[in-house]
Amino acid sequence: MGYLLADKFKDVLRSILPAIIAVSLIARFILDMPMEELLVLAFCIVLVIVGFTTFLTGVEVGIDPMGSSIGMEIPKRRSRMFMIAVVFTISFLVTVAEPDVIVFSTQVNSLFKLIDPMTLTYFIAVGVAFFLIVATFRIIYKLSLRAMITIGYVAVIVLTLYLYISNNTEFIAIALDSGGVTTGPITVPVLLALGIGICSVGAHRNKMEGFGMIGLASIGPIIALLIMGILNGNGGISEITTSVEAAPLDFKLVKSEFIKSTISVLYTLIPLIVFFMLFQKVFLRYSWTAVTDMIEGVVFAGLGATIFLTGVYAGFMPLSTALGIELHELNNPFIVVGIGFILGFLVAFAEPAVSILGYQVERTSRGLLSRNPIMIIISSGVAFFVAIGIAKTVFNFDFIWIIVPGYVLTIILMWCGEEDMVGIAFDAGGVSTGPMSVAILSSIYVGLSSTMYKGVEAVINGFGLISLIALAPCLFLSVLSIYMKHSRSIT
Image (cartoon, rainbow, N blue to C red):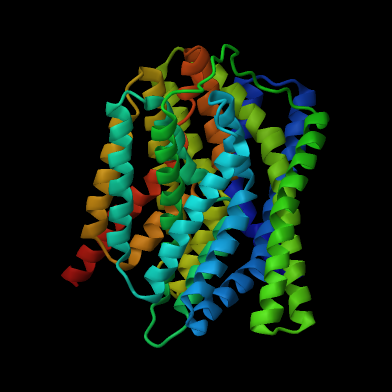
């Protein structure tokens, strides 16, 4: 464990150091933070590094092996009901307790008072679970991932345009954002390992078929909330008159966020550990030693997630909100967009789930696709679309004319590239919207929107960036896929 911790620590420093330097320079020279707040920020940076290292170690020791074992056991049972029950249970448990989903549901409730946060959370979880069952059937019965993604996103486009034509635009960005917030630091490794485990059973199976679980899972909540928007209309929208303010950085905030993060992670891990234990003893018939090793790994991941989320939410999020507010004062839209581009790249590169996906791709492809180029391409795509999202707010043009053409173009490119890259491309869209992206980039977006718009308009314009971040890797990796296919045809 010690060697693995040291190895992960080096990887974490390599990926997260540029984002930390950028955040520190912003705090000192743009926001001119007092020394007391800079000390709190420094402490939060240490928490992020330590938490990220611990989390990745726990994932590799406990969560990855368990997800793969469950995935390998599902096809062996040759029972559709068993498969549906296991996939639904594990995906529902993880999604309901995902910290980003809980925060997102609370934000939506502040805008639509008639929508209860827990109802919204369960609605999102059911959407994820349903599409994960579809994804599992797709792997076992070797159905076309391209066809399923096309059908899913055509449904998203049709429902989005229906809401737009019906002049019910308030819910569009919220629904599209929901696909990104469902894939957090614990969901991603579980689903990736589950998909790859299913592909490990049977002769002549390509493990690359295991990718695509997260991409399909992201479609479920989008469709669920678009339908909710159609049923709800614009009823229940509250008149919000208060502007967004950045919380001051202090150790009271660190303590408060640590308690919240601990509760959220425990809420996630306790049902997950119970489910893993029962599955191991009843179906896999593992020894108690193996069960204990799994629990230790999951607890280690949970401890890391708690520390990491505390650092992000107590240090990076308030700073990012303050930066968003400050950017408006620059009165130079091109500088604002440029800063968004740089931060978009650095934050995506530091995202835990992006790193996990990179490792999974490198290991599954046996080094054919290496981790660093995949991470760089994903981060570049995110940077580009963060810049577009900020330009949309600064220059006040319609969000739908970005996202719908983006979906259409991505579907077209998907059919033109390598088939093995489809799952990776759409999984990357889900993993790029983890706690770092949501906390930092989304907070900048909300802070900027709150200074440019008033009341409900400020909140409505604060949504949408997450869906653009999720779209970016799908589009950029699809372009890479076409390049790979063209290169092979030449050789």
